[in-house]
Length: 255
Image 1 (cartoon, one colour):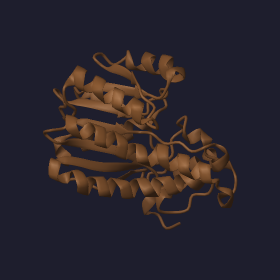
Image 2: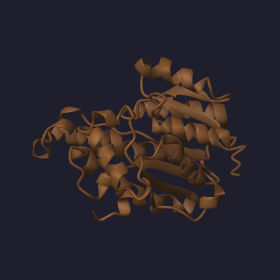
Image 3: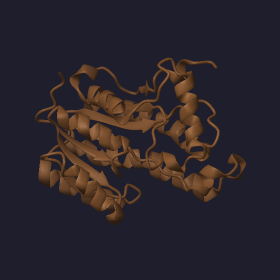
Image 4: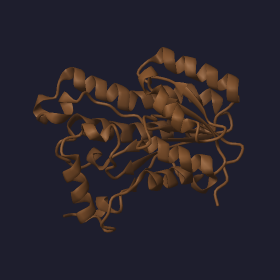
């Protein structure tokens, strides 16, 4: 059994009970970690804090990761409350809906910028802020998807952002390795999250995944959370710069 007692984790990206961030939070909390759970804005606060209150000892914080000022304010608060961090979970992705529903050829310049700013640059920004709070090393993880390497119709500009994100993981792993900080990505199969509902034909995507994957089903948040728990623990002490698939084996199939 993995024991994270005495470890502190900050988790970005909680929206509701369907969030992958919530599945990860439950697993880390169950292993004894102290949790700081972040939601984007005031609109999401009520639902997020109802969930956070179900995890004794967890605290909620508001932080829009597209704002350097909010990131700075958050990490000042984290340092004051916890002193140090051991684990950072980046479960954040966004692209404008119009750039996900139309033809890829019509991707807007602004949509491209926003997708990469929110979904990719934010990992760099929060990692940079976390480094001073990880003097003994730590584990940073983010969430990717198979569309980073193969064409998934309707995923559009978000696929480019995920490809960039996976490259970002490798460069951060190289940069932070000397500090004992590991950086990895989990590539989860499709899940009906708030963000995923913006992808066209999500139902068709999930059906195809269940039909073609070796396990003939879809993955759930708890299973992604289990892999996050592994990456957060000393069992993954030599694992960094990797993209780990948690997709019931879908990624191995040729057709």
